[in-house]
Image 1 (cartoon, helix red, strand yellow):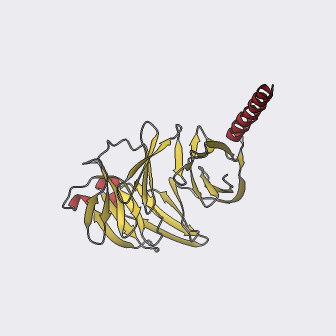
Image 2 (cartoon, rainbow, N blue to C red):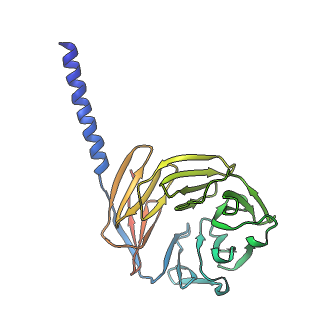
Image 3 (cartoon, rainbow, N blue to C red):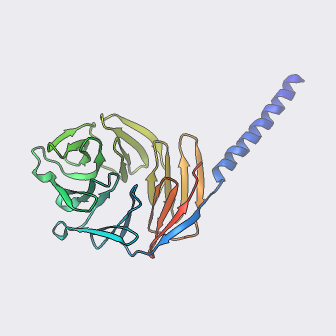
Length: 269
């Protein structure tokens, strides 16, 4: 009798538990609009820690805040492939077609030009980002490896084992190179070349990695926050239904649309 009663209690507990897990999947994160910026841009890059925001229009990089506005253009190098603004005193502008990275200071003056084709070890770069200690993250498609390029010493060092290029998406910070392959497997590589499997992401149109277990992604103009460690997924409720891409930093979600940028304050679980 005691056992049956105990089992009933257990079953009731598991029923409630599974309900709460299912409920946890569907809890929405509500976003409150803080401000909007009317800009016409091809690509919105994001904000730096001094509240300047960056965007690209006709392959010109713009940096603006209030009435302050700066521009950088280098038409001879064609299309801007990537801009890294993590260190606003060393902005990286990458021109993949020419295999060239330009480093800019906070006034968007050119500090240095790195032509990877002129390197003693041949490097063809398909992914780039700023790393710690005067180095750049580089994915070299010639040997399919991640390396670190010291732009002061002009010294290149391969750090990872080889893996076939199927970088559906990549993102870097000073100490980590993250990428997601075509099968939606998510990996990370640290500055010592240690590769870890992070898990599998859902199919996405746009994604942004927040940390080692969390990301925000959009699919068919719906936005989601997911935590792989906690096994939680929440839809983010925003007023704008169509958008080009988004940028997330410090609880501010910036939605980039054809009219400009809408900033929302969100609280992630």
